[in-house]
View 1 (tube, rainbow, N blue to C red):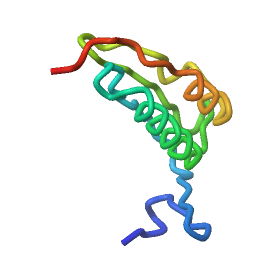
View 2 (cartoon, one colour; view 1 turned 120 degrees about the vertical axis):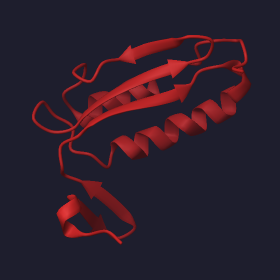
View 3 (spheres, one colour; view 1 turned 90 degrees about the vertical axis):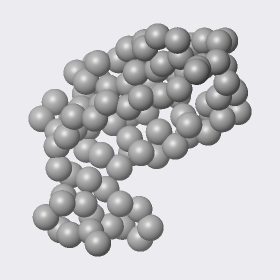
Length: 101
């Protein structure tokens, strides 16, 4: 059950979060995920990021890709608007051509 004290608001079938948070997203960047699935992940991430109020005194979002080794795409303080984070997600590309184990 979602309680108002959680900072979540419901707008139809869409929830938004106004409570500040630091969120680091971990994404499989190996070839084993496949290009089609990677695009699906990016679409999900765009919707996920859209649920938060991103800003210097609000939610910060960082992203790390992994395959054989982790790769920091951006740090928590890299983007100060939701639109900038969503644009960064759209510009992600698959890092490796090796499968994870």
